[in-house]
Every structure is written in C-alpha cells, then in structure tokens.
Amino acid sequence: MKLSVQINEGPYQHQATDTAYHFTKAALENGHEVMRVFFYHDGVLNGTRLTTPPQDDRHIVNRWVELAEKYNLDLVLCVAAAQRRGLVDDGEAERNKKNATNIQEPFRISGLGQLIEAAIQSDRLVVFGD
Amino acid sequence: MADLFTVNKSPFEKNSLENAIKFSTEGASILLIEDGVYGASKGTACESMITGAAGKKFYALKSDLKARGIADDRLIDGVEVVDYAGFVELVCSTDKTQAWL
Amino acid sequence: MSDIKKFMYLNRRAPYGTIYAWESLEVVLIGAAFDQEVSLMFADDGVYQLVKGCDTSESDMKNFMPTYRTLGDYGVRYMYVDQASLEARGLTADDLIEVAWEDWETEEEVDNIVEVVDSAKVTELMAESDVVFSF
Image 1 (tube, rainbow over the protein chains, first blue to last red):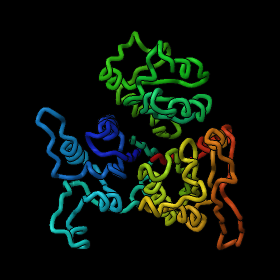
Image 2: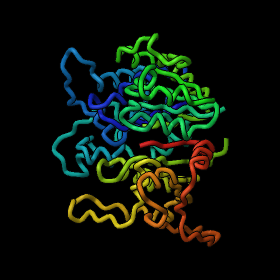
Image 3: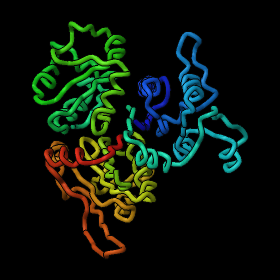
Image 4: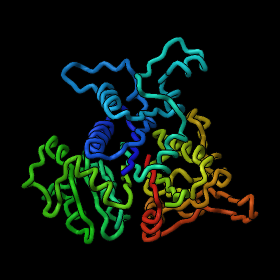
C-alpha cells in the first residue's frame, strides 16, 4: 500500500516525530511504499544538520537520514514553515540573502502542494502531531 | 469498514479520546499512542470512556505502554496491545486514519 | 479510485495561542490549486477560529480572520461547525463570521457556507471523507 506521513512537531520537544519515525520504518520494513514524509509547523526543525543531541540520546535528524538513504525516502520540509523558523537551503539562502544554510541532506524544502499531492496520490495519509 | 482514530493525549489533559469515541462510527478502531496510552489503564476516573463505548475497538501501542510503566495486567479488558507493525496493519486495514491530537 | 478526493480539514484548536490554525489555513489556500472537494470542520476549540470581532492590533499578531471570509474563493465549498462544541462555549451561529461562495462556471451562489451541524452529522461527514487533515 502507498502511504504518506505528515509530521507537525519538532524533534525532542514532542514525541510525534519519534512515533512517525517508528511508524514509517515499520511500514517500509513490512513492504509498504512511503511516498513522502512531509514536515509541517515545527516539524521542519527535524531537518537541520546543526542538531547536536547529547551522546546518550537518540539522534533524531540522523535517524531520518539513515532511513531515507536505505529506502530512498522523500523527506520534504514546507517552505513557508521553514522560512519562519530559520531553516535554509542553498536556494532559500540566495533568494532571501542569508549568509548560511542549515538544511540536512537529503531533506528538501518545497511547497505545501507536496502535501496535497501526497494526500491525493497515497492510499493513506497518517498525521503525527501535538 | 470504518476509520482508524489515533489519540495521543492523556484523557486527563484533553478531550481527544472522549471526542474520538463520540465522533467515530460503529466499528471504528481507536489506537492510543504516546500519552494517549494512559487512557488504557483500568481503575482510573476515565476508564468508563472506553468500557462504556460499545461497538468500537481499542488498541494501545506497546512501546508507549512500556515506556510509561503500564503493565498488561493494568489494561482495561478488551484493549489490544499492538506494536508498530500492528499500527501499520491497522492503518492499511481501515478506510482512513484520523489523528485526534 | 477517481482523481477527485473528498478532503476534510479538521480544526480543533483556538486561533492565536498557537500557529496551528493559521498554518492549516495556509494549506487550505494552497490546496485550492488542486481540484478536490474541500470541506472544513470546526470542533472543540476550533470553533473559536470563526468568531466575529477579533482585533489583533494591540497584540501585534497577524489577523487572519479576513482570510476565512475569502475561503469560498479558494475552492472551499463547505464549512461545518460542531453544534455541541459551539454551545459548550456559550456561542451560537450568530457569533460566527459568514463566508460566501460562488461557482464561477455555473454562477451558483451561496450566501453563507458556514453551517452548524449536530454530532451525528459531524460523524457522518468525517466518515465519508477520503482524507482528514489534522493540525
């Protein structure tokens, strides 16, 4: 079955992204397709490469990266939500004249249309939030 | 078939469980995750929300129960424990998933 | 499955205290570019999103009330309000904004698409949707 996942909360503050991660991993391991993981609201904070948790804690950002690399997963941060919260890739840095970027590959920044498209094309949309 | 409702709030904090039950159809599945699993324990002031809900099936996520020290013998009768693979299975076997945050 | 899906945006949060109401509205606006059947459901504290007379000038928050009034132009055909949530908060339909809708092709017009519905209807409407967005 083709699934998509929406995540509304940032890492560490709320369990939503942990739950979404374990759900997504289980779906992939059980042979389902995950078309897209869409990060909205504070969820975009999952995509910064500057995240540095203490060594005895899980690394939520790296965990997404590893899952994405293994399964070629599409990790999308909403551009409007990302701009508000200071998540910047090369394109956004150039457009908004910022002197730094902080996005972690393979996360990508794109529009809300990606969420709508995922909802249309997937058999199920599963939302994780506060 | 009917929908899957996920509830991630303690029933003592917010009305998500109460209203997920209220607004779900006969035959709906209600999965308690995160702090929502507190609603699955028996002997609480909120127990009747689940014991009094006829025609709905209740599930609780195993790892969240364990993290919160809710042993199987504390669960309300009829609440089924599922792991993440079971969560995925519930999503796929129901019509759609509604998150009652 | 047909290409047209029934989308329902489920709004259960008050405006201003958190950004959820405003950012979920942004999804609805962007979603207008896709040809889906769109309805909004307001329940619990979400009913406060439609209350008339909000003035954010002193709080310096973005006032997005005018945006709700334009939703009819953004492909939203139905805006439902849960009656029990409304009554529990001491409100009636008269306290809510009105949103007009017009089909540009058929010129069909509706003066106000905001409709207060009972719990059974809320259940029915949600059950018949293909996708429920939660924020």
